[in-house]
Image (cartoon, rainbow over all chains, first blue to last red; front, side):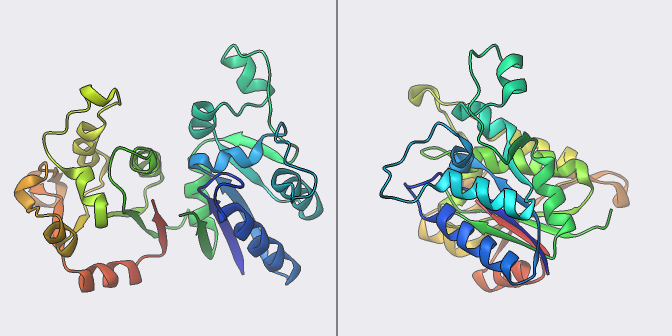
Length: 130
Length: 134
């Protein structure tokens, strides 16, 4: 089955990102295809490489980056949501006159159309949020 | 591109969290994809359509007028759950009217909002291909 995932909450405060990660990993390991993982609302906070969780806990951001690399996952942060919350890649930082970017490896920033397209192209769009 | 039945489910109050505003942004962007779009409002989500919203005192953007533009985007199937209205002491009269011009009926202006029961809402969800809950 071809599925896509939407994640609506940030890391650590909510379990949504953990559950989405476990779901996506299990589905991929069982031979399913993931068209896209789309991060919306506070979910975009899963994509900052500046996160520094305590070393005795899981690193949610790195975990996503590693999963993306292993499976060539397309992980998209919504641009409008990212701008509101201070998540930027080099292009976004330059365009908005910021002095730094913070996007983590494996993530890219794009528009909400990518979410709609995921809904159209996938057999299932699975939402992880509150 | 194929056409699917999209249903956007709105469950939260318009202010206090950002879900309602960012849901509306998805609906407006999604309208460009020419899909079969419906909106559902239930639980505190029914407050999103309340008329006479004023946000001056809380310093937030009042985005409620944007709902009135949905008809121009061919988003005209807006379902509001009766039980959610009842539980909050609201009636259809407490909501801002949302209308669209029906091109199949000489562009007559028609109401977009339809109040439905929980059972009918379940049926609408069942018949949708893509359900996004906000």
